[in-house]
Length: 261
Image (cartoon, rainbow, N blue to C red):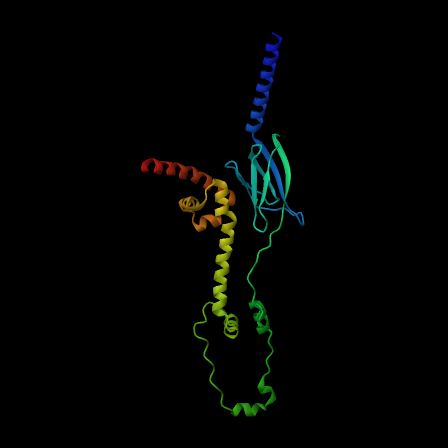
């Protein structure tokens, strides 16, 4: 009788311990985080925080703070332009966790810069406006100049475009008109691409959905975001729509597989 009682007690203890562990694993944890620069301790704003183990993601605010739901054992990936990616695994079981996370600055290689004697466009403009030219008539008697034939005035340059005269002269003398226009176009395009890439790229979508390779490219084509949408919408709004489109994409994929059979 005593042995049976001991076995029953041991069984109950094991049962309660399993239930307690299951409750801990299933419980939702709220992480309140703060991202800061490891060098100057400034806030890391608008970083992407993605839970690699569940479809949860968020973005840090202008003060570096963020809030995200997770389970014990989940791993977060943190990405931000100008910083190395960080991964953080949460193994605690508390209902709420407060944690400060440091981000290490990242160095990017940039193309070389050509320096010309004209300096920047604004430098050239200032020098041209302040240019002091000698008047040859000051060194010759005015009666002599009166009797000399005058050369006809030079016609204005044909079709200088929307540039003002100073801009046109700068382009003529420096030989950089086409290069400057092309540079401005490239700079505008690169600025747009950089802004879009900070909110929407293959790495972010792959971490959020788990897709890779051809399937990832197929899904990103399925999303079909326009350039205007990616430029004007916030990163959080884009991530939210990616999650919604992914649910539709999975259903369509399953339907295609069933139809093939």
